[in-house]
Amino acid sequence: FVSGTGPGGSALAAPNAQRQITVAGGDLAAAGTFTFTINATVDASATGSLQNNVAVTTTTPESNSANNSAVATTTINPRTSSLSGVVFVDNNRDGMFNAGDVGQSGVTVQLTGTETGGGAVSTTQVTAAGGAYSFQNLAAGSYTVKRVDKPAALQDGAEQLGTNATANIDAIDNAFTQLGLGVNVQAPNFNFGLVNEPVSKRRFLASTVN
Image 1: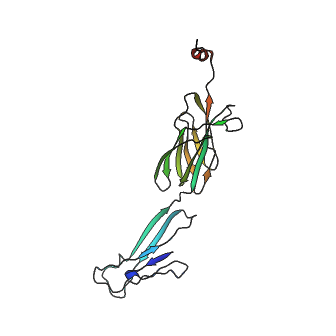
Image 2: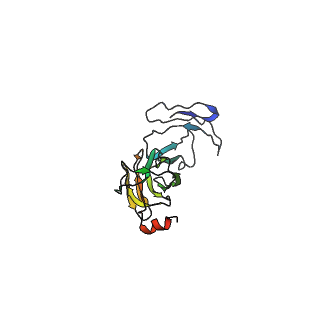
Image 3: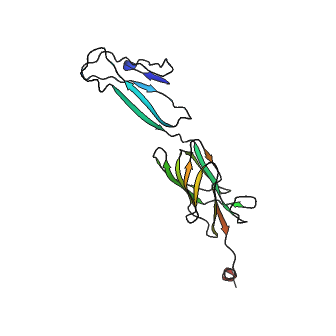
């Protein structure tokens, strides 16, 4: 509980540990109404479904008591996770980004998927200098991360699974699929490898200027 305003602008308080708030509606005519506002915050670690409950009582007789309560449910899915990696030229062709490999800038990486709360996600990034990409402010959910393009002089290499999230590798589409991301998780090193095209005698001769 942060603050509250009752009928007529009166201040509301939550004096007990259960955060129960009593609002005095005063005398109401038949079918009359009153409104109140309560401001609250949610703990940063809160997840799942949270319920707010409201109930009304009266000191005078009423003909219908079946509509004296209501429940509002809110799904909490904080966007505190991230997913990152590098698009790189795998010079030693070992499928790992390590010494001797070079990050590749200017490559588009696409993120799609569904948050656990049901929200759809679709966004892209272009790798920066050094080949890095990073998707921030993600909710827990199931995602696909795909390398969309590459320089014409390079060929598809191997994908390298990162840490702190589970995923499958789709080598045909150059993607990590069914990537399960948790709450408040930083999942790095989901890397996309590229390799140099081998130099053949035919290509060498075709490129020779007489």
